[in-house]
Figure: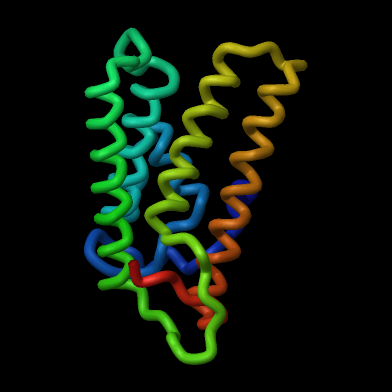
Length: 166
């Protein structure tokens, strides 16, 4: 994740709700945490994914979901959101196809993992002591995912990598 004021990933100045570059990790993590951010549909999807992870992992609304049928429904909804993200990316992010290295994971899958990691890191911050290794591990994991996402976005926009079509 970038320092305040630092530009990371794709240029966000042209982004709107229906087309434009991919948001950077800072916006995605802020959206996942429920902060008001302007930047388009992918940020709404990131928030929706985080809410589902909260229900599954930390008990959004009072208790952790343990009912197998509800867990299946949460996972089904997550997959729908991942596919919606991937569809949006396929329609709105130009990519070079010839001679470009293929990335092994879709943007939807990466945003799902970022949302889950943001939920885990925030939960650790709220429940663990400042010297707890799990707290530091959770935030380190989130930072690594965010950096990897931003590097991928930069590579896709620059034509050095392409995303899978499935």
